[in-house]
Length: 116
Image (tube, rainbow, N blue to C red; front, side, top):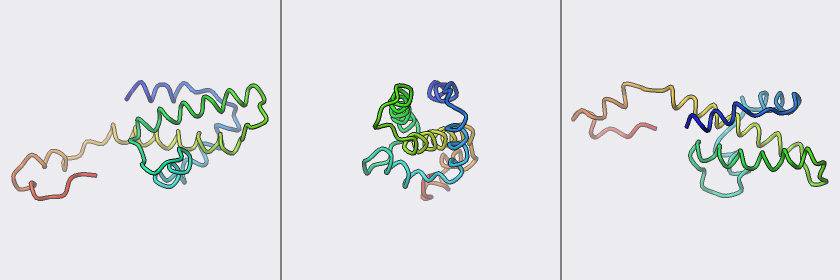
């Protein structure tokens, strides 16, 4: 997981793209946005989603640099927003260690619903 986060942190993009992605990341919704960007129904886990988004973003960045006619800045910003949102999700998941997860080992918590 750390390798995925380090790849995201090493991205260097023009200031306008990075700023637009930062501003849009606060409104990021996994279910809605990942389905739209990745183009299929099942939403992958955050680490897998980051890897897919990194591949998409790499292709978009190459198209931007070469000046291809099919390049869409809007699509590029959408992918960068999703990448920032998924990276934030990964970071939050790695930091969260709640007592509720440990309580599942005790018999009193056996009938309780699993942690999200």
